[in-house]
Length: 115
Image (cartoon, rainbow, N blue to C red; front, side, top):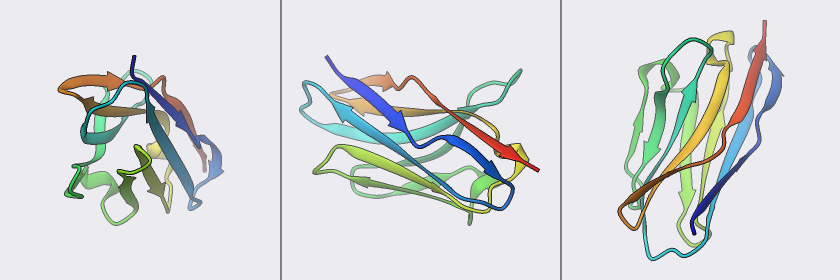
């Protein structure tokens, strides 16, 4: 069974930084694209950033130049470095991974930014 476990959320002041981590564990042959999504209250879940196994990245326009996604294929982990956080970045952040052609989600971690 595959599990995604996120960590690193919390409360930060506007302009501050947080780093989210996602660890994939279980019976794994290969991990394809990994990504971070977020969902604010009353809104749909949206893509924040994603990265392929070869390191190609995609970012939402709203986070470009502030967030950086990376991964360690040897450790089956993905990181999201979030800088210059804004109140509009508030939400539950979910890790997503394609593992052996199946899509898995983490349980989510809350990010709160105070103005």
